[in-house]
Image (cartoon, rainbow over all chains, first blue to last red; front, side):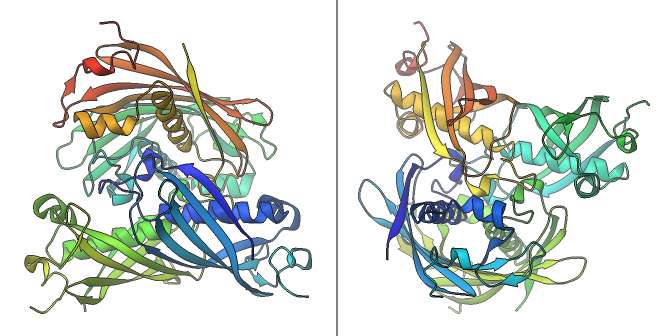
Length: 135
Length: 135
Length: 135
Length: 135
């Protein structure tokens, strides 16, 4: 299964007084890689919300921290589709230090589609190929 | 003119590797005090957006940093209405360390009302007393 | 086992364009409850870092999202010690909407002590009672 | 005077319920451009802190918001040195939407050097050329 990646430098704002990146920011980085994965597969994530009136809500996050990222480090965040069915989509992630290739973090997020009223709905037909869901 | 204040402790997430609160977070604290000022004056800010389809957009921010805030410090953030007319509302802020009363920061924000299409509109009649705008 | 809780209102800054709280912010709320749990048990978390030169690093986070939190909602974040041994401490969390008592999220974080050079060390003797670790 | 720029896409985390980027995030973007300006001029900002034991603290921020940035927009953030003397350095910024070149925001930040104890000090000799301060 293909994966997508984004590259960026750690922002000063992302550090905390421990001198390393605050742990919640890895979830933001995973979201950036997820957006890029959709783009690579032909869909701009923001169009899903704008055009179809459905939201892809996060229902679960897991993240393991293996080594710290520091200010100004160049980071690679990778996302891939880990599992999918008409009710739930799971992405897997790897966060690396670009210079050394060291894995800093791994994680997964699970998502469900919600309609405008916040009710869980099945993945719309037009997005099933995006998320590799068989008809 | 009355003012409103909120009290809270500095979050670890708000610090940076300098060991103090990252400067952009003061803008968030000012927003908390602004929300409280509306509440004290009888309006829940979120109802303005929900009920009237207008947004109070920030058009300018100024902030001066006098002394650092640190993790777990108890902070007081105060807001007051500094100036207002049918086209522009200005709030003034003071951020204090609760324990000592020391002023950590002062600032101002300027706001304009926007309609749903992002066009600038005059302050709706029903909110003129909230913002001390004479009819 | 005792638990601790903090109460606060959702900040505008914590929402995203979905109109609800961005999911990474729940990790910040869990950290606030964790800080409070240490305080209730007699230790200011910041003193651990300042006085003893050890850091309590997050090594794993899990979070499940059950219902959305919205701007200006009053939130209760609860933390308790879920498990502990000389090498690893696990906290459990529950995030509630204060008004209704509805559970919005549950989660766990796992932590290890690191020395100043980032090496994993055993929980210092003086903090073993804090974390309910038998001698 | 030379300027530096960084390019990036708006993160979902940076939006708020107004559907646009939350205003405090522009300060983070200005910091990214400031870091890049130092790099272009031959200094990694993080080395200033690591090697010399001095900090370049923000003492004032001004920011004007002209048009909103939206999720997944490609943004250009530009920084230049606006003024400097041995006691104070002022940077100027422009935030643009990359696709159209539209200016979204302009701003300035003022900085002073602090020693490890938080006392204001003059700009160290070795950084005077970086900040265009005449001897």
